[in-house]
Length: 180
Ligand SMILES: [Zn+2]
Image (cartoon, rainbow, N blue to C red; front, side, top):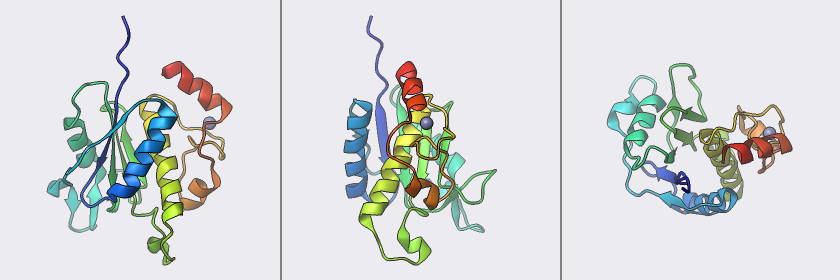
């Protein structure tokens, strides 16, 4: 019997740039060799907002994303424009719940405006693609990588993201083929 291939679903939250995300989804579909669905009209849960911090609590959003799954195998990646945090990190680029197979990527720090620089759509697209790729591969079971040129490198800031490539290193490629 053929094993059902887990579906990849992207959930733009709130006002996240649908055009950019659509482009990213197409790139990811090619990379992972499967269709990538995009959900529409997903609201950011009000209860995730922390008034004091002025940020959104990623754990609550990840739980909400898990409720959107139609099958247990589905991998859901939420993309949000707003600033996020969790119990361990005040500054967070992305968060994953490996058990729930959900991930959340914040565009807040990916944008050049955050650094007082002019907008750069192409650069944001590259950052968004690399980090979406890393998070989805991680949800499939590929661990983070120590190679700073590999897409699976655990990027902590924009320098890390911009320096790394858009592909797996040889080790991660083998790991990926094993889990797929
Ligand atoms: Zn690697």
